[in-house]
Image 1 (cartoon, each protein chain N blue to C red):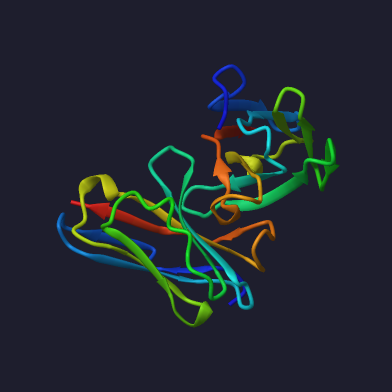
Image 2: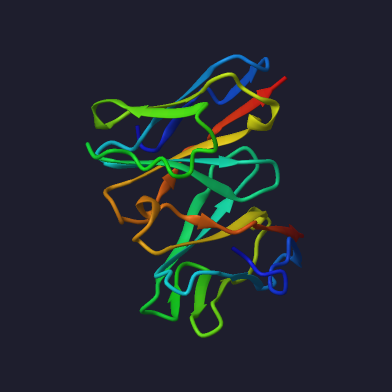
Length: 114
Length: 114
């Protein structure tokens, strides 16, 4: 597609369940980023993928969070044993390659943990 | 990040006025700065960016000013329109850390009345 696509757009789940969030970057973009945005706050970096290199996981808040990127394209962010504080909007961005700006964002997945 | 002294969480202007949104950044090593506009329920949308070798850059109705001496960034919007109402975020990075992930400020909500 023309832009970064994220699914689902909204997700409501019970505390303790696992969730998977999907990001489809702009075609040809090798750099992919996940950010988290809590209500009324700025964006917080989570993880970064560049091509086939090992991802930079320095922003992941706990070991319940993990992400994969298969085939250098689509990425999945997984949150295990969700907690109420995980409620936020999860945003994905892509750029043509490492160090290339600007990053282009999808519209995010709004995650609500009951 | 944004200093308490310069960051206004909200800004209200009349249609047709010029708007100035300020941001202070924290890392003197940052060499890239960017402004995003975020409308409700949407992901951040790129407005304009600037590298540290410049102090001013102009786009369509927008100008970004960079003052490296005081680590200050501003976004000027000329002839503000109701469609400019949104949350505006500044972001920075050094290109050397965390896979060039952006570090975001808290955002300023711009309200334009007609």
